[in-house]
Length: 229
Image 1 (cartoon, rainbow, N blue to C red):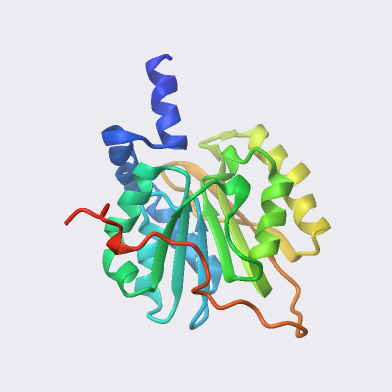
Image 2 (cartoon, rainbow, N blue to C red):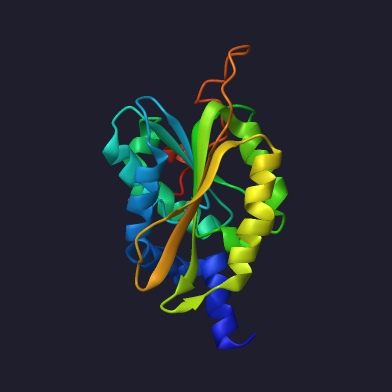
């Protein structure tokens, strides 16, 4: 494996000491996108929020700072990065306001109608089956819940035709086919000359069946012994 290929793979699935460094580097690099995405979520008191591909847990921490009543869960495939997210949110994990789960976006391991908000930042590039991920988001969202999928579609004067095609030919049509409403693209602030965009949508409201409580998800706890002092 060439060095650049190996480095690129660390951004997709951080591993070991280098992966820990990459995770913290992404925290610094993506702060603009994180803050803007949180604004798009339009969170309400007591919301239960899921971050798909949570990285080192910075967005979880900032959500907890934004509203003292919300509960947050992060999902990431990297054991290395899960440990970083647990360390960053140690107090909230112990207080049962936060959880970090190791798992794959392709097989989201949560119960039906569990979350009020689902978001993901810079993971869309790695989705192997876009309609399947959207279907899983639809399944775990409570009626009336919403999603925000943030990504970049270019840098400087260059547009990234590949990701733009995925959004317009797969992501938006799949969301509409699933019955999401108010599906739209929103243009965000440029970050490090990268063009920030989000696709947002909302699940139709129903009144027939109560949603599951937020605490009913699998989670690693602060007592598992893998959070460093």
